[in-house]
Image 1 (spheres, rainbow, N blue to C red):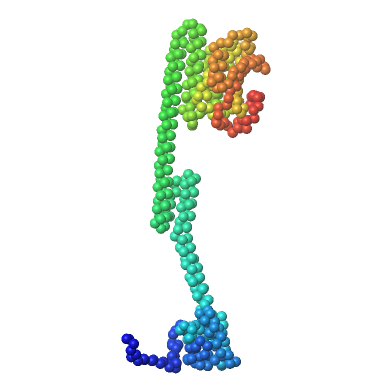
Image 2: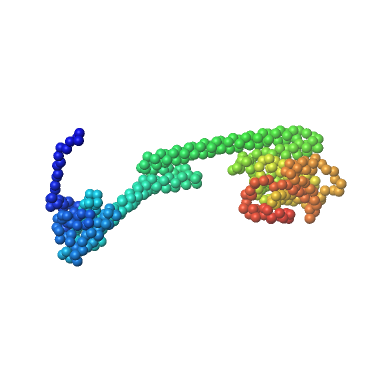
Length: 421
């Protein structure tokens, strides 16, 4: 300080005092250590003979590798001919180097395993952690998600009685999802039950309405019957009789509906059989014997279409009873065929036939009107064996299915032949 020199102190450590500590348990058995300078000359060693190579080779070559790579590992024979592994690295800058040596054990030597372990141990640790995560995910989450997926698939098929009870032992997130599925299934079940109850109640109400309408029509028919018996004028009595027949046909519609399994539709085959039987029976005790037969395809028909169909049939049968069977009776044939987009209803009698130039009465006028309600038309043709055929051809009601599977094969053929079965 202030340009004044106070002196100097020098500390000297003899190289012989720099003995490495070989008691470290990390060192392999038989390890020796040395310090070398930058030229590879041994400055001090725990055992000098270990670091003198056989053949007079020196250790200078390893220093250049240590300088370039930071460390060097090699195998050589020492002065005694023993194969040893050497590993060295710079200790202080480029002036001092540490060199370790141990008996060689081939591929399993510590010098070779140490660099490999530097790479393999992290890789092994990563693979172990990955396997553990996958196993943990499989055990905790994936299998529970698969379980919930199976439950959801069952719900998609409409079975809501299954409950995800096993998921109660799952982690919290899975339990929450299972609880949500359970609540959803319960809500759907309750809603379906309420809808079913509402439909059942509506069905019961509709049946009650049909039953009451049928009863009211029967009351009207009974009143007309009483009035008919009180009349002395034959045309008036006949007119009331025709009206009673029409009202009875409508009452039969409502009776058929409330007695059927589906109150929205009635089977045409069953209805036509019962209506024809009712019409023939009503006149059985007041005239000659009439034999009737019905050959009909099965078809679900709603009340809107069934009413004009029934009233047309009432007029056709009534006309046959008045004009074809009034004197001698005969045979009445009713045929109903579904031919794809069109249907045909026929009433055939074996009477004398309509006289030429006969006037069109109220019955035929009504039959034409009823046919128009069904988008059809009425025609009267002579029967092959004598008599008359009243035929109504109309559009087949949409989206209605035959009840009898044997009738399905005939639908869509479009054949015009209407033969008896």
